[in-house]
Image 1 (cartoon, helix red, strand yellow):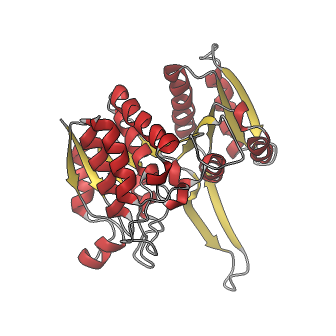
Image 2: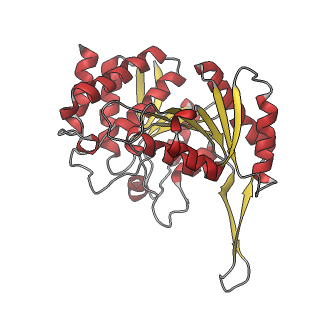
Image 3: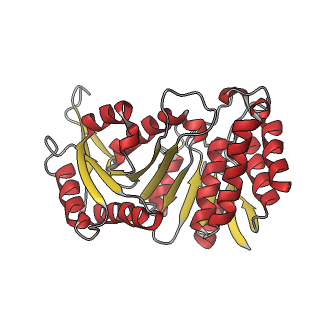
Amino acid sequence: MYNVVLIPGDGIGKEITDSVTKILDTAGADINWIECKAGAGANDELGTPLPEETIDAIKKHRIALKGPLTTPVGAGFRSINVALRQKFNLYSNIRPARSLPNIDTPFRDVDLVLFRENTEGLYIGKEHWIGDDEKHAEGIAVVTREASEKIIRSAFEYAKKRGRKKVSLVHKANILKFTTGLFLKIGKEIARDYPDIEFQDLIVDNMAMQMVLRPQQFDVIVTTNLFGDILSDLASGLVGGLGVTGAANISDDAAMFEAVHGSAPDIAGKGMANPTALLFSALMMLEYLGEDRLAEKIRSAVYTVLQEHKKECTEDIGGEGNTESYTEAICKLLRD
């Protein structure tokens, strides 16, 4: 049995985590869910958006499935998600984007995976004012060899393990010659260790254009923190949006899987929430645990529901149902 920390989160978090745990339990996943608190709800109840009990549970079990969190204004964290990633050095943010059956989008046959460095770049938050009149602000971006080697090698190892043929490194080394220039230099060095995998590098603005011109040309993408944040959302848009794409945050000895969409408090409790993104994140978790066959069994059931039982799906993906009907349709296939 696997012990997994479960953080339902805020807004629709409880509804979609209930859906996902029901689907995994129905499929036969041998998981002991350890429910913990974080987010605005935790702040209201306990006076902190990230309780020590939650941190201790992740320290102990080293794996978590997390619903969407609302970061309280003025509670000490720029982002609870960023705080968790930095606390456990979850340097690798992995965001697959794959075309799904019967999802309305102009793009077809998209199947790419984006690796985003999660701990450095501009997101370290080193900003300051020059002078006292707040008319001149500066921010510092940090790129190190150690962190760059980790994320780039992770992308190549993923490609090797999963039988993918190409790694595309995204940078802005023509302008940011020291920071993303270092990232590109390290990428070229590591690429030599993987002669069977095609390697290319693209400047970020060209990459954004190429992703909407012909996204099918990309396989595994690796980039720095800010570029990865932007391009991973773009990739999600190619296949239907943040509601249908999963995400993982992985370090050498810990992992957190999450829905990257918002907590949607405006629809909380109305049965309208779509659990697909968190479910796909949970399937990434199963693969991390070595349960690839079980993950594929659940994924196949989801695809069948999207293709053949669309009426049971939630309205945001073209159905006429709700969270419960969508969940039950998947569970029925798994039971049958």
